[in-house]
Length: 67
Image (cartoon, rainbow, N blue to C red):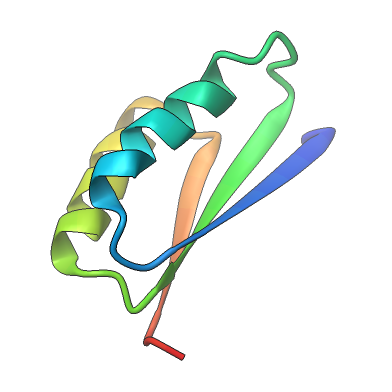
Protein backbone atom coordinates (compact mmCIF):
# COMPACT_ATOMS: atom_id res chain seq x y z
CA UNK A 1 0.00 0.00 0.00
CA UNK A 2 1.43 3.41 -0.97
CA UNK A 3 2.21 5.95 1.72
CA UNK A 4 0.24 8.71 -0.05
CA UNK A 5 -3.13 8.64 -1.80
CA UNK A 6 -3.84 11.56 -4.13
CA UNK A 7 -7.37 12.17 -5.38
CA UNK A 8 -7.96 14.32 -8.46
CA UNK A 9 -11.57 15.01 -9.49
CA UNK A 10 -12.23 15.97 -13.10
CA UNK A 11 -15.11 16.56 -15.44
CA UNK A 12 -14.02 18.08 -18.73
CA UNK A 13 -10.37 18.97 -18.16
CA UNK A 14 -8.60 16.49 -20.43
CA UNK A 15 -5.82 18.88 -21.47
CA UNK A 16 -4.90 19.90 -17.93
CA UNK A 17 -4.69 16.27 -16.82
CA UNK A 18 -1.31 16.00 -18.52
CA UNK A 19 0.10 18.81 -16.38
CA UNK A 20 -1.62 17.64 -13.20
CA UNK A 21 -0.41 14.07 -13.49
CA UNK A 22 3.09 15.12 -14.57
CA UNK A 23 3.28 17.29 -11.45
CA UNK A 24 2.51 14.30 -9.24
CA UNK A 25 4.95 12.08 -11.13
CA UNK A 26 7.71 14.68 -10.66
CA UNK A 27 7.57 14.54 -6.87
CA UNK A 28 10.66 13.30 -5.04
CA UNK A 29 8.58 10.88 -2.99
CA UNK A 30 7.51 8.14 -5.39
CA UNK A 31 5.46 6.12 -2.88
CA UNK A 32 2.03 7.30 -3.97
CA UNK A 33 -1.13 6.32 -5.82
CA UNK A 34 -3.17 8.80 -7.84
CA UNK A 35 -6.88 8.20 -8.32
CA UNK A 36 -8.62 10.41 -10.86
CA UNK A 37 -12.36 10.59 -10.26
CA UNK A 38 -14.12 11.16 -13.58
CA UNK A 39 -17.38 12.97 -12.84
CA UNK A 40 -19.21 12.59 -16.15
CA UNK A 41 -15.96 13.03 -18.05
CA UNK A 42 -16.08 12.75 -21.85
CA UNK A 43 -14.55 9.78 -23.67
CA UNK A 44 -11.43 11.79 -24.59
CA UNK A 45 -10.58 12.12 -20.90
CA UNK A 46 -10.99 8.38 -20.39
CA UNK A 47 -8.74 7.64 -23.38
CA UNK A 48 -6.02 9.94 -22.02
CA UNK A 49 -6.20 8.26 -18.61
CA UNK A 50 -6.06 4.79 -20.16
CA UNK A 51 -2.85 5.79 -21.96
CA UNK A 52 -1.29 7.20 -18.80
CA UNK A 53 -2.34 4.15 -16.78
CA UNK A 54 -0.63 1.90 -19.33
CA UNK A 55 2.70 3.62 -18.63
CA UNK A 56 2.34 4.27 -14.88
CA UNK A 57 0.44 1.74 -12.73
CA UNK A 58 0.38 4.21 -9.81
CA UNK A 59 -2.30 6.14 -11.71
CA UNK A 60 -5.82 4.76 -11.81
CA UNK A 61 -9.22 6.22 -12.47
CA UNK A 62 -12.86 5.75 -11.55
CA UNK A 63 -15.60 6.63 -14.04
CA UNK A 64 -18.91 7.92 -12.69
CA UNK A 65 -21.90 9.69 -14.30
CA UNK A 66 -22.10 13.44 -13.73
CA UNK A 67 -23.49 14.12 -10.33
